[in-house]
Length: 496
Image 1 (cartoon, one colour):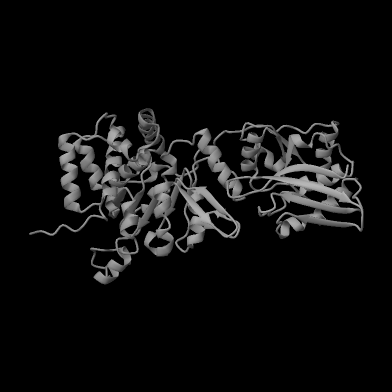
Image 2: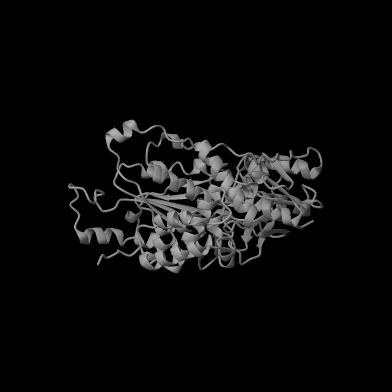
């Protein structure tokens, strides 16, 4: 047989389009050509495949070899097609049987010795392969990741092993599915002494999935508090765990087994935050999907980078358009940020030398639309040495996490989602207010000059406060507390 067909998977964001590898052997001068929009790494597979076939004790055909990677208009990158190309050549030359090739998809990079190396994007490929009904064959190092999907996955360590499977001599081992989660390794909230208001805000943010901004003088514990948020969040569900694993797989990063916590430096570029590149890759906001994105010293980030956050905070995804591809990455993250009240950080103290213009310029780095999307803006006040010494140890993360889990369970039972995701008519249905609560909220919003978006975010926070208390309806106490968490986007109140 001079023609063979094998199947592989490309990588396009977190998608894995099917690639049909057509191999044809023809008479003529020996040549080896790969067509179908291959990039440099794919073209270089000619040398890897040739050496792998020879070193696996097969004969490399001295004929005119043409390999077509279809569809032709889909860019092909990386060494993930090596295994499918090698098997296509062996099947076309009659060295391995070709009748069972249509039942498999092959993904793996070949070493010169014929051994298989892992590739990024094994999990998205397994997700797509499940829909096709075929069995996925990957390198042994990628098998555990691919097996997170409940679909047949075979683990191979070399080209020779795969050929033995096709000959029916020695079956490949089936990868075992391991969906277990690792315990959170973040520090305990008990280490935070004092700061009861900030601790309360952290618990409320965790319970409802709300965005949170801490502001206050340097050294008051803003970063310390934010870094402990993952420790009080509930564990990922199986579906969420697979979503996160697929993102990290597409980025070529090791699999994580707990909620992500991403803390990029303030020098990060817009592309680093949102993702991109000629071959689009996920950025920090996507790598924080189902977890926490922490922006320390938030006003020090480039204004253009911060403004990029506005759309993902509303939609929960980011769309990257390039000339060769358009990719959508999920970006359903919880934003936690920290900032100082002024450039020096000591606003209101005698040592502060910042002028009003400097303070305005510093705070104006956070636009109104961005502040609008941050549900809670909480001051973290400084503490004296005596207060630190006298403050008892705080409540541990375990007990706080239990209350958070109970509040989230109430939300899921009532509306099928957490409060931060409520929109439109869902707000009217699940955040209905009585006459007294409605009057308080309306008067406060008008007096503080809050926007309609802020009004809805206050409602969501109030709903979370009621859930933490186990209340069916939102009371005036919850509305008042939710309003107290919006400090930076309110207009100044001018006394008569």
